[in-house]
Amino acid sequence: IREFLPHNPVVAELLRTNPDLKQLLRQYLLAPCCIRSIYFDKPPRANWVVGWHQDLTVNLRSVPSGRSWQNVRQLSDRVVGQPPLTVLEAMVTLRIHLDDTTEENGALRVVPGAHQQGVIRTDTVAMARANDQSVLCRVPRGGALLMKPLTPHASRRSTAGTAARRVIHLEFLDQSKTVGMDLQEVIPF
Image 1 (cartoon, rainbow, N blue to C red):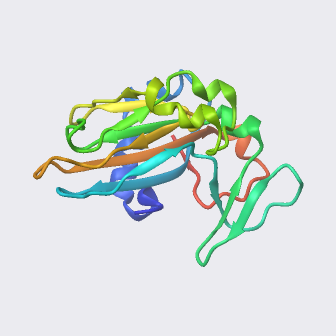
Image 2: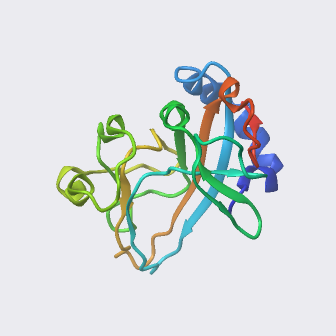
């Protein structure tokens, strides 16, 4: 579910007013605001794979002006675009796990430190070798995973017949960096 927080104001308020979450986010961002929220549900017996990728785009209300944006696409319900690298580098992703996340139900795999390489094309040797350098992120129910959106990540097929994997995926940026961007979602924390 895209724009999860705007569609679920009670959940948004619970997260926005949580002092522990605020303290965590303020270690990375002076004035954090959520610029994208997604609810992922990989139900039991879900058998899809999410290949290696980086989260490179944000949702916008309108086509941005200026040449610093890349891969801008008009979709039926929003504009999607890749902001300048400085914006991507400043972002932080928080994934709140509603279920135990294990290898069997398709836990996220990440390549630690690779976010420092900037944008990595998916057809490069570096991305092809991601499996060899990856770490499985087992996260217990109620736990959270903090990462940079530029961190290459993937998810394998679920082999568990009964274990769901539900995650609230939140992307944050410092409020000062949102100036001039017509973001579809901006929720101050």
